[in-house]
Length: 490
Image 1 (cartoon, rainbow, N blue to C red):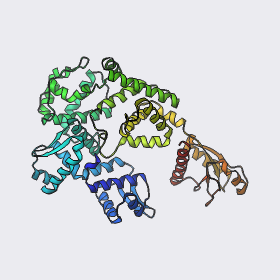
Image 2: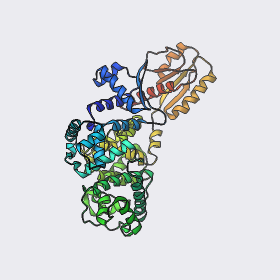
Image 3: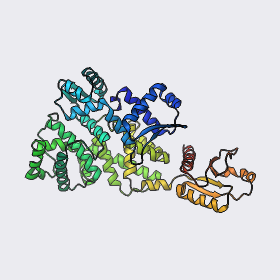
């Protein structure tokens, strides 16, 4: 969905992604990597800095880098792009306000009428594959309602944050009371994150219902779903006064129907009931169970909460059934970001997972987006998985050679043990001369020293530290470890 951005903002996105992944890149290197000329690059960096404050792209003698204050993160930078984007501002504006004319919307977005028409034409070409269209007379989002709602949900989530959605507080307060009632009467527990996501989901769908895009139809909730909310005069009255629409069974079904129409499982017992009714659900559960058992066996890691993982894998899959493969984010794939960071430390985990997926589901079942989502669920929901993976982390041999005294070397050894725990097998040299030590250097993968310019004929890496390891020294050691372990695990 990032392709809705203008060419200028797409360049900004590429610069941000490159500098976030690589520190201290020269202008020439950035220009060569992205195939932008240096003049355009400098102008783009100036523009990014104009709307991304307090995050900045700065330069030093070593090159350009992204400065992110301690109380901010990269999410803010992606939100800033969306905030500055005319294209996404247009989409958001006509979602919330369907009374715009070309002239009033142009004025709202600070662009000319001709620019607005060109932008709509550009967006329609981009959104066509999602079966979404922006009509000009009147200005509306039309097409596949599942894709429209999904687009708006992710736009709001990435632009404003899940806990700061741009709906009137009185509406959010009323909806929270209703959702709390529904959860309680249906024995559903919701944490902070789940409530926020469900709130956003329902508010987006409700906006489309109120504007007549999602037609309410006669439908009944299945047995086992408590609908006493519809008989609660206080809550239904609150709903009508705030949202200006009756909370009928048809409206309620429109709001919550996605969970029923997709065979969403409200509990593990409900999942088992669905499996007895639908062969597709039964097959899905069996294959996911086979996947978990395969991973547990090959990784030699027990699964303490298999039912919890199974229901989350299943529900995530069914909720995305009617969406295109790249519909899980706008600019920033948070699942992929977490997966990349963790699996870089444990690449063997993804190797085993990919092998199991191919064997059980075939080569085409899991595209990269679905695989990232599945990996995210496994890493976050499989109790104690990260602890077990950490315990299986490869170790490297590290020798300490300082020209100070043994007590100082013991101090450095203790500090490195704290910093790297079970990643480093640390030892202090017992050789009396440098020439004698060089003969045994091949015993080590990394040598930590305070002697400048020390090198060896073999492949042993050398990290020269200060009298006490600085953050840069620690970073250099991490880089050495990552290079060694990534090579060893290929």
